[in-house]
Every structure is written in structure tokens, then in C-alpha cells.
Length: 401
Ligand code: PLP
Image 1 (tube, helix red, strand yellow):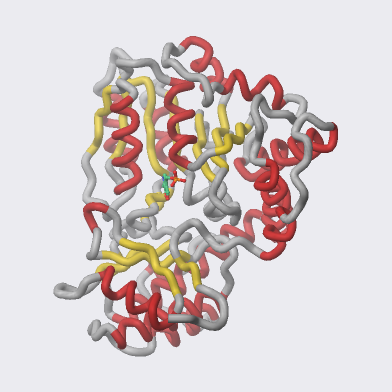
Image 2 (cartoon, rainbow, N blue to C red):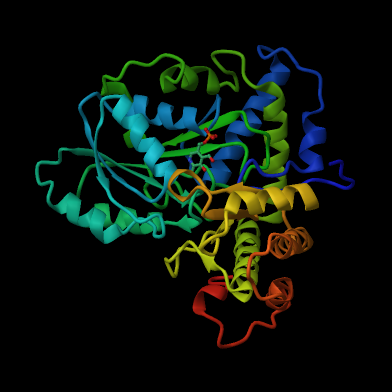
């Protein structure tokens, strides 16, 4: 079926790329050993420090988030090391599998895919580890498969309360640049991220922000590595260069995306995401559908995962929405495949984009014969215009904005 108008890419990443970023990338490729390139390299490396909220180096790899996960593991851990991870959903499970393939022994705290990390449960595990055999705590900040955000400052507090020396390694692949994240203040040792979500870029870049403690660990750990070796990157990065051919045009886009985030202001960017997410929840609750997240303070600002009523297939519904309204919604992954669809509301997204997306969902529910109460889009509008019912559940209120 051919469609007019733009495609609505409402998946939780890759997120739509703003025209400004597309235009910034529309440049001839330059010599990556030139002085002109060094200016670009320095600008993006410094700009990333602002977005990651760190004074330490941020490494930019050509690669995806999965590559950045691997870089984090091979630079900090050694075969046979023990780590603590939490089963928040599909992505935490994949990161665990990768760690296991690298010979890491993972203590995986089980989860129901509807809650975030419980800092108290982590604290109890660390308390029991008097010999400090656990070398790292590895958690996902925003679990993109479930729409649950975890409290990383709380995880840091739990580690400190036990005076445990474990490294704190955090996946911010779908949170960075959309949800407040403070690498230095929260004492994170490695922050892993990528280009195609909050940075509003095409896929193709992976990031590691690293603390002094992580850097020290990288000098003594015994994991073999080559492409992902931080030491190889840090040397030329000091002068704005890369040890191998960088993704030059994505870096032009990154420079522009950072400018956009800083022009709006990071606190404003974070507040916008919370507001749009709360409006989405107002619509979903009005429809009478269930939100997967059951953590009262953990509703993700970047996506909302919605459970389909019994007897209705989420993928069949998504197909109807795509074919009729030219909108892509996120699929349920692995354990929740077919049971959940995900509405992305991140990056280049504003009130009207969101209301258009919610309209597509509501029309799709009707077309697919999914039982629901009409008027969810109106509920979202009410929320956005400050007409929220004062008796609304607390998670519909915007906290801290
Ligand atoms: N971690 C999280 C939380 C993600 O959302 C994703 C992808 O969506 C990944 C890891 C994997 O990243 P990539 O697909 O860029 O390799």
C-alpha cells in the first residue's frame, strides 16, 4: 500500500532523525587525518562529556549499542570474574548472555519484566559478599523491552552502603539524552550508550563513558581485546583523532544533535519526555488497556509498553496500524512477543507528534476489533493542557517538572 505524508516511526529507537541533523550529515567525507577533522573530533568528544554529565573521557566507537556493551566488558573484566546483574527484561538478558560468552560468572537476580532494579536486593547480595568476589554490578537504566526505568543513584547508594568496591556498569542505550543520567554524580564507572535513540542519529555509533576507576581496571584486567581497546582510542582522541577510520558523517550529525540538546537545555529535554510519557499513559488508561510497567516510580519517559487483552495478538495489531496508518510501533520482544506493543515517544517528538501517534493507535484498536474505551487521545490532550483529574493515579502526574 502506498502512503502519502511522512512515516510515523514510533518505535523506541531508532528514533526519527531531525531534518537539522540530516542536513548536517549531508557533507563530503573529509580526510580523517586532517586538521579540519580534529576540530570535529574535539567538538564531539567534548560535547559528549556534557551530555553524559562527566568530566572524564567518553569514547565513541563506530558500532551499535551491542558493540559498546562488549567494549565495556572486555576493558574492565577478566575471564572467571563474578558480576551481579538484574533481569529487568530482554536487554538485561542479552547483556548477561554476552558476559557469559566472555567467561564471566553472572549472578542474575530474577525479575518479572514489569519492575526495575531493586537496590535493596542488590545491597543484600553485596552484603553477603564479604570477600568482595563480585567485580561489577551491571544494570540497564531504561529497559527498552518493558518501559521500566531504574534508579541508578539508588543503586550507587546501595553499593556505597556496603562499602563494596564493585564497578558500576550501566546501559543507558535508550535513556541517554532523554532521561536524566549523571555519570559523575552517580559514581557510574562505565556508561554504555549508542547514537540512534536520545541522540536522534541514525544507528552506527556506540559510546563508553569511563571513570578513573574503570580506566585503572582496564590497565590490569586480562580480557583479550583489540578493536574495542580503550587505550588505543584514548591516545589519538586526546588530539581529536581516532585510531582507525571513524564514522565521519555520523560525527557531523552528532555535533548538530548535541547542539540541539543543549539549545533546548538538558533539563527541558528530560521534562518534555516525562510530560509526553505521562500523556501517553493517560491515553492508555483511558482506553482501559494495561501498561506493562508495574513500578509506580519507574514508568519510562521514552516508551510505553502496552499489554494486549487476552485473545488479541499485538503483532497482528501492529500490522494493521502499519498498513492503514503508516506508523511503526515497537514489537514485544522474546518473552512478551505478541503480547505487548510499545509506543516510542523519544527524541524528535512533541505534543502534536505524540497526539498523531496516539490517534493512530486508537484508530488501529478500532480497526483490529480490540475492546477499548474511545477517547484516549482526548485524555492525553487533557493531560497536556493541564486538565488532569486531581484524582488521577500518582504515576500520571509529572514528577519533578
Ligand atoms: N540495550 C538496550 C537497553 C537497548 O534498547 C538496545 C537496543 O534497542 C540494546 C541494548 C542493543 O543496542 P543495539 O541494537 O544498538 O546493538
